[in-house]
Image (cartoon, rainbow, N blue to C red):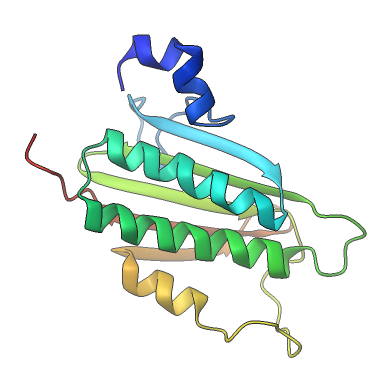
Length: 162
């Protein structure tokens, strides 16, 4: 994406409320980075996924690589929706940050919820994190500030020959 495209309202709408940000683990600003924050509700997951896939496409990632990114981001965001705010009166924040730097796409999915606690009444099969681990080059799960969780996924930016 060129700087002119980033300033184009049509392009900005395509990324939702994505904003430029510094790379997640780099000191030099990335030319392609986003941060998107929304309420942790099921209907927000597709927008989060699409924003990251748009970035992956702009980085030249292959269709197969983008499919892996899409599934991993969907799983991580769905985990936030299903588990992070289970005892809260209303859904809290779901934040997705992504950056492409040195041939690697790094995506962080964050919540400010209850943290990683056991949930015996879980509605899922419990396969989401292991699936993310298989799809990504690296997976890190950590506490997000005083509360909440961060799932950080790294993907090698396998590129199309353009």
